[in-house]
Image 1 (cartoon, rainbow, N blue to C red):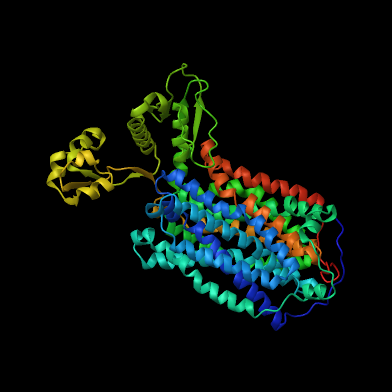
Image 2 (spheres, rainbow, N blue to C red):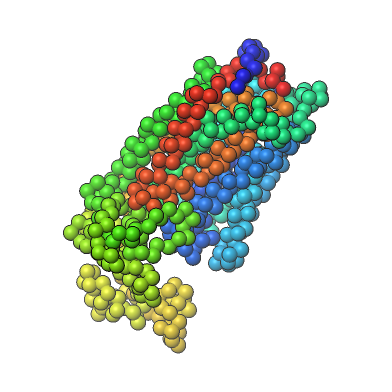
Length: 628
């Protein structure tokens, strides 16, 4: 893959016009990433609004998959807008993309939830998410190409590195806005409607970004090529239908962007999800810790971009991949010990053992979250995996017998959902309760919420929970509230038949008698250690991402540059990277090991390290003006 390498234009300082180009391109791209990341940062609130009819674990996976849907369509946006950018021009194309992104984000803030619009709400949400992905597919290539074509040859890494900061700055901005809104509202108000505010504020940012971009001129390199009549008449065919260009795109994908993407999304997005949903650190604390790590690490995008002008793009990217491969598992384990040491200790000291009949345990890879376990072994492994409990399976039980779970000295019998028939719900509740009690006794950080119990069900509730040693008479003599019967039915405190014709229901609040939940004790969370680990992950991101725009634009000729660089970038980041959170979560849930899914980014990064080291040539010194 020969590269045209020249001395390029002489080194000089950055002109006022070049500063304006970088600022305007970067600001608009920061805004687009702000829009895109809002969904990821507010996944929990969005999941409860649009997927509230599903259990929490299933809701999490659905929410992540909708997040991933925006990534899946990004390559198609790269094709559509890349072609327009190579035919019409860079400036006008990314004006269109920013309008689509901004309006789609604003509409998410207005969209009613599934409680009001039913199935239409999540369908429209997915459509808006896909429009965001299409727009972002055209945005990045345009901004990176536009800045690169304004830059001196020997400072292109430094100039384009400012574009590389935009994704992290967009995430940082989204977290800051979310934190401000969270601190201005009660938790209930934020979860109910406050999460919409950051989406609605995007209208202001959209107006500012469009106004600034309208003042820009076309890229001088593209304009010169167009004036000379050297532009491509069919960018897609030329970029991917001719082997000399198609092989460059293939090497860019598998040797650079796929590995860069998994390092990036593992370090910035999945780390956030891991802390909040796996380690159970409260969302506000996670946002603050991520924001601090990003604030500390963002400057290194520019540092490594500048360094790539001195020693080359490829050495820095390959070094970042190698470091991520070697340290991903140790870093996430360190994150567990720093964020939830009680969980880490319990995992180390208490493993579950499942004894099942041969053939009772099935393969449970379940990326969509819709498959429900049916056999007694699958029910046991599914619940333990979602509770972050490591387990071993022993297939020595007699055929036809239900699996059992041993935790410490306690042994709990599972159940077969098909055989249980109409008793499956009550059998499931009893099984989960017994497992949770055994886990709590085994040192796992579980707490029970307060239980709201209707007076009609109080005696049965006391009898069903002997371990709590409750006194029905004492509860009835204590604090109580009265609610309308229809509200009690809506809150599932009673069925309509149980409420009968009674207009009001007496409800008791029984402390520490409700559902179990894993949690991270705020007093035991080591902020300094968590932020330190997150900073290292962000540093790897800056190494692989800081020089990536420079090397991609230098790999393709001007006539197809927008199209050529956009597709491998967005397949890498949209598919390999965008699917990472859902894939890692699903693999970890399948295996019963919260770290198992990390093999996905490690293997993909290793693939890019090998292919990139052997087949990708460095592009330092390429003269874009000669490479038309």
